[in-house]
Image 1 (cartoon, rainbow, N blue to C red):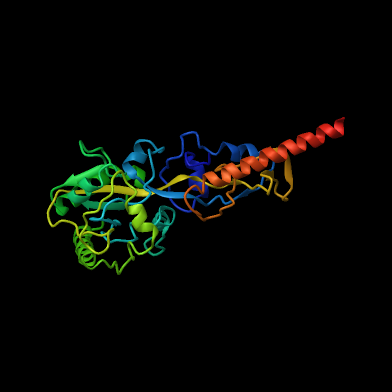
Image 2 (tube, helix red, strand yellow; image 1 turned 90 degrees about the horizontal axis):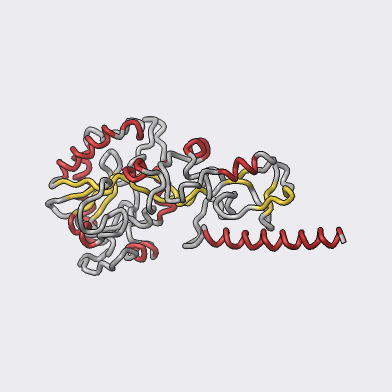
Length: 320
């Protein structure tokens, strides 16, 4: 494991505010401390396997059940605290999440620190069970609902007031509601034509694939872009507050081609090997494909074992 659940390391090393992730709770960066004590060189410490996570779940327990792979829903948008869409909701999770880290130097804030995933009853039903949308039944605490967008905005504003100690005091902009309505209206117009002129939603091959990645396919969208459907002009409406999270971090001690840990002068530290999220990932900032966390871990784990055994055999022969 990496250091997803070490708040101090997250603040010190990651490229922006991260609220938790779906790594197991013991991912606290222990190997960074162990290797550092013997002079290991660190690398890739600002990167992670990024994914959005529900804020309310993360505040309850930073080790959340799952990251948001693809934002579910067709009648759904994500807006920031200004009520404006700020990303392609369907783009791949690793890149989509990093939009949360954009910094406004004039306002001295992360304008996209919080994302409000707004959807209607169609999406709540058709995409039920596709996280963070819950299965049909009682709504969990991370889902907020109201009969109108006006009432939903009011409830979100009140909820943010309670979360002030955890968000740095983020609140909805004074014109959040009219901007939200304008964002929904523009999205609805573009859903009719199937062309997202603002963020090109659904235009890369991976997006329609991930769109159908939930518990059941959704095939009854009559509009030309399967990832876009106009939001209903009446409630109920729903909202989930999303923030930046990780599958796990991917920085730590650097390794060589044998998975040996290197010191600050690029020399292998005898007997110390590493593989997986606890070391500086050979992927750098990239997420190559599905299994990009597991592939390097398995590969470099095998390389470490092979090199260690060869080294043991060599030492034994020399001793003999």
